[in-house]
Image (cartoon, rainbow, N blue to C red; front, side):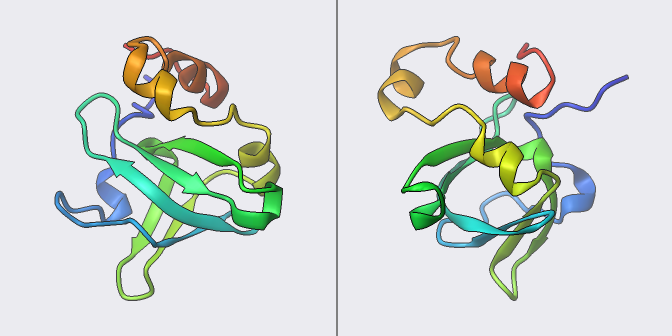
Length: 116
C-alpha cells in the first residue's frame, strides 16, 4: 500500500495549528528556501515553498507526505526530495489553485501518487 502524499506523516512531528510560514526548507542535499504558505486541509495538505534566488523566485508546492521531520526549535522543515526534484516540479500558480478543483493532480502525478 502506498503512502498518502497529501497527509502529514505521524513521524514528521507536525501538530495541527503550527504556523510553518517562514520556516526554512531543507532538501536531502541542502537548503531550498522558505515556506510561503501551508495547508492542513484533509486530503490535500501541502507546503508552498518560495525558493528565493536559488531558482529565480519560483514557488513550488510540496505535498505534506514529502516532509520527513519538522524542527520547531530550529524553524526548519526537512523533506525527502532533492533540490533538483523540487526545482523540476511544476510551478505553483495561486490562481489555478483557487480556481481549478483538479489543480493538485499535476503535483500528485509529479510526486508519484494520483490525487483521490
